[in-house]
Image 1 (spheres, rainbow, N blue to C red):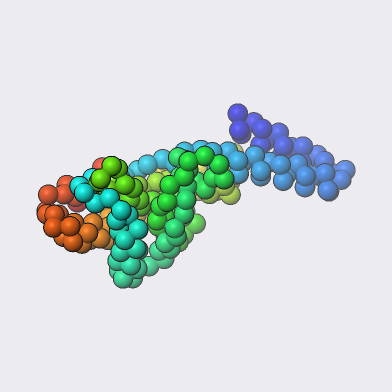
Image 2: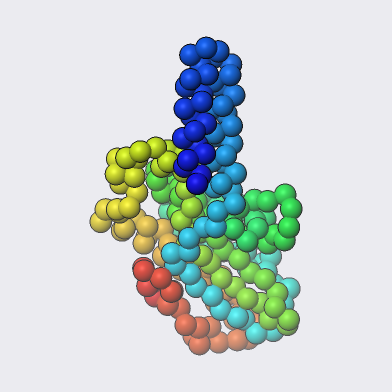
Length: 209
């Protein structure tokens, strides 16, 4: 349905531009806005995730996030950007509704890789602290707009990932996973808990351990 709406608006933009350039730009702008709204409300696909409940660790979320960010930065992994962001259930910024604070790790190796973001989170759960991270796939609005064009998926090879891309994606996710685990280990030791009891294997197609 979204494709039909966008295609219709693009056709109107083309026809209108023949008579009036301003009218054509208006229709084109509306088409871009439709795509942006569609992407903003579309849920991200979770490809890999890991979580653990740390007992009696309530109130330590901020400390854990700061340590995680510092450890990731110390790895000197190339092209990684880390931001703090309040996002909604679709893992996008939202002005209304419930939000939660995440560390968002973005791989700026290429425009394609920017669609693979890692969301790191720690939330109090009773007297405990629930810690988790999620490797997600969600294209930016411009990427989604390009994919609406006929034949774009084949040209951009979005349904395929090369061996080198897979290696870089695994290295990226493993870097964040190991850094987060190091911060979790540190917190648990401070709380006189044994981090060796943690199941460190992730769930997903990468199966990091």
